[in-house]
Amino acid sequence: MTTTTTCDITTTTTCDITTTTTCDITTTTTCDITTTATCDITTTTTCDITTTTCDITTTTTTCDITTTTDDIMVCFLGN
Image 1: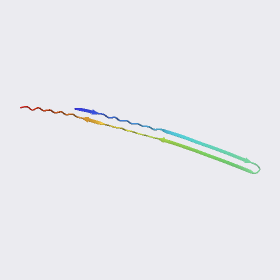
Image 2: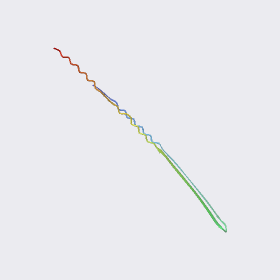
Image 3: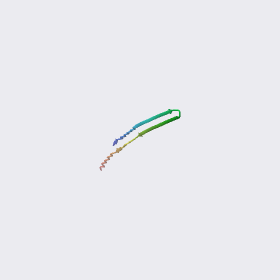
């Protein structure tokens, strides 16, 4: 009787996290005061946030179980 057992398990986990944060804030304030009051205020706000990618790959491969049973029965019956 021969028993062969092979169990191969492969787990691959890849998690790439890339976080790119760009926040540009520009504030321009111009205030001109003369006898005639002129007040110009310009506010420019730009906030760009980019968040990219968490890739998870799980690969589980192959549990092969091979069972080989060799039974040999030889009977000699004589007179």
